[in-house]
Amino acid sequence: MRPLLSALALAVSGVMVGLVAALAAGAAGSLTPGFLFTLPAAAGREGGILSVVLSTLWLAAGALALALPLGIGTALYLVEYAPPGRLVGLIRTLTETLAGVPSILFGLFGFSVFVVRLGWGPSLLAGSATLALMLLPTVIRTSEEAVAAVPQELREGAAALGATRWDAVRRIVLPQAAPGILTGALLALGRAVGETAAVLLTAGTDLALPRSPLDPGRPMAVHLYILAGEGLSDGRAHATAVALVCGVLFVNALAHMLLGGRRVP
Amino acid sequence: MREEKAAKLATRGLRVYYGGREALRGVSLAVPDRSVTALIGPSGCGKSTFLRALNRMHDLRHGVRVEGRILLDGRPTDRLPPEELRRRIGMLFQRPNPFPMSIFQNVAFGPALLGVQGEELEHIVRTALQRAALWNEVKGRLHQHAGGLSGGQQQRLCLARALAMRPEVLLLDEPCSALDPGATEQIEQLIAELRETMAIVLVTHSLGQARRLADRVAFFQDGRLVEEGPADEILERPRLSETRRFLERGDWHETCKGNRGSGGE
Image 1 (tube, each protein chain N blue to C red):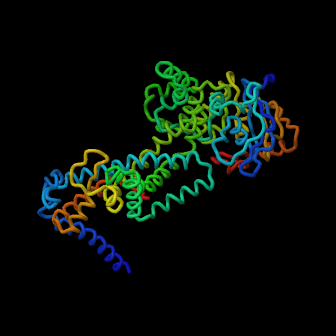
Image 2 (tube, rainbow over the protein chains, first blue to last red):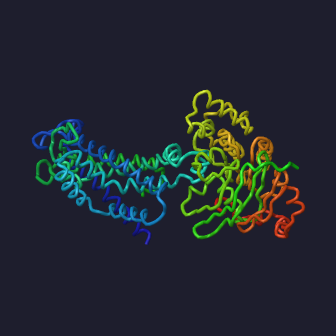
Image 3 (tube, rainbow over the protein chains, first blue to last red):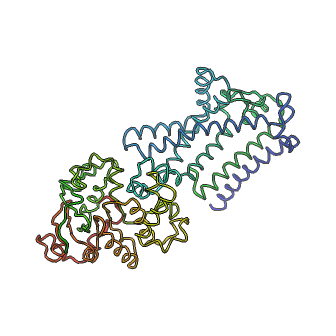
């Protein structure tokens, strides 16, 4: 049985390597050193992906800026303040459900609420807000675990000195939980960078450099979808894909380094 | 043998419920100032539960209910904010629980919460470390991490941390149970010195420790205060048969096994 299984494992690894190799082969010729730092031209047929990369980074940063305070705050409430009971159970069930919702549904929700109802139009802000909702479960879960892992003895020690619960959270719990929270943030960032469906309907597809949060911008995943789908430039679609894979790999590697060998939740 | 003094701390019909279980069944006890009151009794008898009620540590846990009155200097404490009460009543735990920060920051933690800083803070930290007989060992490395200290040093650091608040009462929850004989001796010597300046309540599993330190002894069993009085009377000539039976059993650690680290019994 063992040779068969190891052959299987090898085949799976081969598929992974083959996937990246195929992307790289398709990108050959288009993936020049200047590709990342040149603005696209002729609807993406020519030039690079500078505005696309910047839009992606803005979207991811905006999503984290919204999701982190909300997520960490929720996690702190659940672990430090909430009495055990129905409310906590309800919040947990809701976040877990949220984690299982296909991302295109977030996209549709973001479109009808942020883009249309709130009148933000297709924009980095609407895209970030939509992404933030999608990332919340990850941020809440990882922050909750990090906060809960801080030993109770430390909270008691602080309380015994006359510290309020918030004093203990601020001065002891949060600094102790920070690496775990950061890891969760990076995992979320990896997802945000590669996400397509949630931003397809909300961030817009404009190729110009975005100048404000209310400007539309085209994220990388959407860019390669359009390039390939409309047959604009196969080589540049592949080159964008390679850049995207490298970005996500980099962020995930950083998260794994911080996790220090623990498994990704 | 000391004269009985006016009670520094007193309880009237103190009851504690864990969920529906009554863990402390109406305890009235007076703790005189400038003396050591030792709480003895078998495992799960309510000693730690009683101790943790005195500085309202039970407030930190959900599902714990406390009834009855606690008087500090003859005045009821129920209208004091718990933080203020805990500043006046310090506590040392079974296992040393230094904060994951520097030696200096550990001792400065409490005063810094009150806004003390600069030279005044340094003076408080130094005095507290001296009173805890730790100054000479750490004065050259105040800004190193507290985790580098030995177990005995860590417990003395926690004592210094408590003393930095200039408490009027000190609660000691088996403070030597995690220490080796040498470190135990140091802590006991400090307790004997501190007795001159404050009221001390000591939960102990060691008959020898009670003999060496206690001015008064209170024997707890099944959540009740069975008998209480001057140390030599209770330890040598107990009036009640329950107390006698407990003292004659001899091996305290055997009878009290299973209580380690539970923190709630």
